[in-house]
Length: 214
Length: 320
Ligand SMILES: Cc1cc2nc3c(=O)[nH]c(=O)nc-3n(C[C@H](O)[C@H](O)[C@H](O)COP(=O)(O)OP(=O)(O)OC[C@H]3O[C@@H](n4cnc5c(N)ncnc54)[C@H](O)[C@@H]3O)c2cc1C
Image (cartoon, rainbow over all chains, first blue to last red; front, side, top):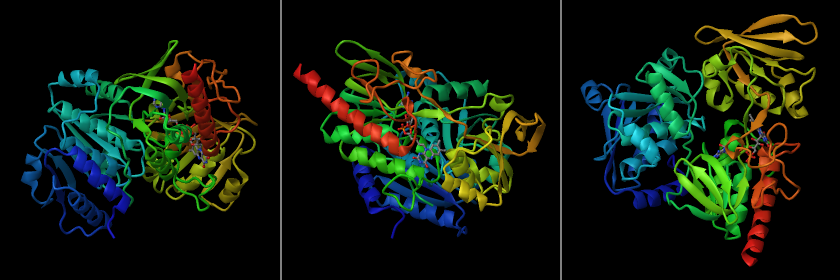
């Protein structure tokens, strides 16, 4: 039996069929020797997703391929980068489990379509940002509010190429979580320095990002 | 590991017969009843469908689930149930509501929607203690969501503030992670359901500190202590802890209404027994209204009744 229920599979087949207009690559960097439950489940999950649409391609590479990881703009491993011809940077560091599975599915649909679910006002404000912004959203899989913050970071990256949006599963990167003093999620770290906590509506999220950058 | 799929509608329209603010148990139940009556319905949700129950690990007093289930799963099931009959859930925050003689306008960051009837089911948010240091340590030791943040307190000593049902229930969950938990309660007795109190008696990690008030949170970069004062002797002491979870009550999410509806002194929306508010065509359901019990079962009951009243209201409006 797969990880996805028959009902979810059916739903996803229909959604991908309806929404995807271009190919999306799930580029998965993993430690090939890692036989932990998380590593095995992540691989299995991505395999199942790729089997649901001809538009989804799965590429698996090893964490030892440091140069490639860097070329992709990633800075942690294991990582999943959701890529397509559409501009934007969506990464998932660690397992996209629990509520984050929805963020992954939304990410695939966003990269494979032309939709942008952000208000015009926020898109305009985002387009005025010219420096690089790296938004890392620390989450736990059981956090119901975190996927909202991850999705907002991902959507921001679609609106402006200078922005990178990533999910970081805090249990899997506990040292990094400790370094950033994460004790409540979603915990959002901007450019490795400033941070804020909480799932906010997109405009407030953008204001906070700007605030912590200054 | 579970993989939770939240299903969304991607269709965008702005004109509906009925609108619901909030996709918690009250709003989603109303959506089920309205959609089954073939009323064209939209539900607005600023965070995630399911509402406040999503933040709790376990619900075991909602009928039909004798073994209990996680709040997240119950919320997700309610959401799927409402989508099945055709309700639309819009992932947007409502920022204002305005009424004219014909329609109700619902303002959001993505434009203005209109509907002929409205159910406000926007629920509540956790109340803060408003004591020194609290604001500084939110996210740095202070949390309001055990399901989200419990893993960060593995092996740590922590405090839970409030010995109502939520505080005790969440302490039981947190005890799977923390080394010790002191539950600080303002009153001289806990107010939780007896079954929960029986369970903490058997849990040697949990200790009750009754008739004490929290007077401050202390620490440098992150929380290192909670200062409490005995209400009996006035004696003050600091509990050395790295985490504090606060469950001292709820305040209604009514700010976006900007005085449009009559509310009670605590800002909960006043309704009549038919869940009508002070403005025609606007109903309120669930935790956001003045009521004496705030639970999933009562919110669900309210959602059904409010939907029924909206159906009757629209029938009358369309006749006239
Ligand atoms: C820790 C905890 C444990 C609990 N345990 C239990 C239990 O075991 N059993 C039980 O029966 N009950 C329990 N409850 C109570 C239960 O969660 C509530 O009674 C129930 O969720 C109320 O449902 P509701 O639909 O009225 O409001 P809510 O669940 O609060 O839903 C309101 C929704 O409206 C949304 N919203 C608010 N403002 C806006 C806006 N402006 N625009 C768009 N959306 C908006 C919110 O995001 C939210 O999703 C618990 C509560 C807590 C906090």
